[in-house]
Amino acid sequence: MRSSTSDITGKKAGSISNDIFEKCRNFTRPSDLQAAGLYMYFEVFSGREGCAPGEIRMGKRKVLMFGSNDYLGLITHPKVKEAAAQALKKYGSGCSGSRLLNGTLDLHVKLEAELSALVHKEAAIIFGTGFQANYATLSALTEKGDVMICDHNLHASLVEGALRSPARTMRFRHNDMEHFERCLENCPPEDKILIVSEGVFSMEGDIADLPGILRLAKPYGARVYVDEAHGIGVLGPTGAGAAEYLGVLDEVDIVMGTFSKSLASVGGFIAGDRAVIDYLKHTARPFVFSASLPAASVAAVGAALQVMRDEPERRLHLLRTAQLLRGELVAHGFNVLPGETAIVPVVFEDELELCRLCKTLLEEGIYINPVLRPAAAQNLLRISCTAAHTEKQVERLVNTLERVARSLGIER
Ligand SMILES: Cc1ncc(COP(=O)(O)O)c(C=O)c1O
Image 1 (cartoon, rainbow, N blue to C red):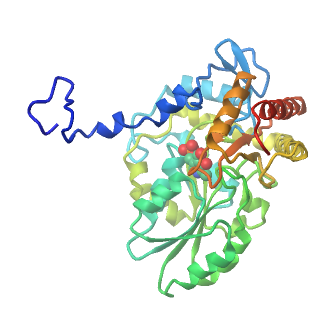
Image 2 (spheres, rainbow, N blue to C red):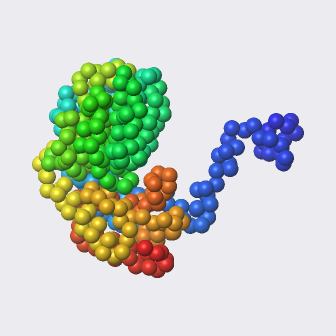
């Protein structure tokens, strides 16, 4: 408070606050939702002991998990858990340093080689999270005078990277190749251009028109960057992602992936030309000035990649399960966004109705993520299928959703 006569709490009616925390006290959206019994965030889970695949514990209860991005169902795979346990034993619990100095393990180097082979690139670099990989790379790779042309629906990590970058940024309407071409036409010939898209879009689950992007971009000498966070493990004959599925993996210049979804761990990577990766290794500040991933997390990714190669039936089962769910929901009259990936989004226009729906589903033993604007263009019940789900669990989900939506009077 500016006034010298404020009370012990710093409050004084009528005076202007100069407390930087003022906005925090005025931020009541979460508590308003809590008061209405509709707050859906920070639900607490407590492991998977005694759970069937596809289930998770909330204290004594077991709930069906349709909100996890563990697409291949590998978080509890015995080989993945064993690899992490062995690495913890051999290397200890952390690296206590940056990769640049004391933080590089043989495990990091081996995993980078495996990842670059997976996505057909010369080299790869591992980051502490997928968010860091996007943020660090977009901001390190572009300079003043460069141009970044981005799909409109990018993940926050890409948006933040673009904001941090000194490059001029243009956004084209989601997956709209005509608009994309107009953005390219607006670039003078001497511009150095980076195109940024997701392979599978994280909220809507649709697939980018990568052949269209590459066909239009290449005559401009533009480089193409694809975030495959939701494509790896799910699409393509070897699970390399949307670019592999669409037959254009070799033409994409930079592939980004995360370990927090199909690869059952935490972390992220960028793969591309060796010169680009070497440049990032020395200039990407969140890489240089942050400690490296612990051995257990790295070993889990290595084991998950091996299981992905050895058990391709997981990916096929996942895609069949998602297709089954999509078909059933459409047959029940739900407004499902079209797609063919593991993400099955159902549109519910009314935000409070969507929160109420999720809350009631959870009371019924099914967890699903609500996605509220502006995180997506429409309010969505974002159902995530995994290879762990069974036909019976899909049936239970559809029947419960049908019953709960009807009991809440939600229109379709
Ligand atoms: C498209 C996309 N990119 C990047 C990320 C960030 O990945 P991570 O959670 O591994 O940091 C996410 C996470 O949800 C994502 O959906």
